[in-house]
Length: 325
Image (cartoon, rainbow, N blue to C red; front, side, top):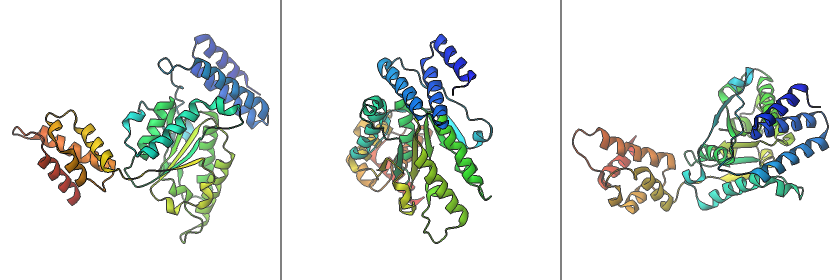
């Protein structure tokens, strides 16, 4: 089952004291065993790895899983990074943030769930308006779970040639099986558009059928995140393939105020601003827009030829400029 290279790498990682590499190789061996039809051995290997992780887990001393750089054709399909973002850096409604916390908790305590035959959520669909934090949340999950974040590059994935996109999808899902990480499919509606849509063509149908099949067959240790601004055009059959659908909404007044305060806290005089007034003027904006307005205000101060202090009027002018543009 395991090849000689895997066994040698396993022994070397143990000798070097690199526990995370040891775990990563062991999980690859488990995936290989499963692909060969040895499901029981695969599960036993995964359970042993998780038990070892749980016993030795200490976030302060925990090193991340080494990033496996995509090679060959995969190098044009996946970009990879290690994130240091944390939950404290995202601004979400409580109900949304609680669902993100639940994913993290389940992933960290997967061995406790396994004792009852349960698995943590690992196929998640984010949906909501642009600029509400979907991409940032993917980065936060990677940071909180110490996993590499792989982003699928749609411009390279989707082609006009019959069957080519499905073949590339298979490469990605093979990588998902063998290399643990967080895999982020942004603008997922490009892959999962409703088959009943009027502009449906044969190749789009084949892509959708492929993604349905790959999601159904996924039993990896990785987390698959998909995000869309247009959940209404996603094929309904896809919803059943996800463990959770999480809605991202425009920020409330309280969150807007928090974003403004956080963005301007380093600027002298910001404590004198009327955050309630400014928040009222930003109702209906997404978080990304609000941060841009604050950045524009800061630039105005930095680049001003005369001594200018931050004020309510300055920010209100930046809001009006943003609306006009």
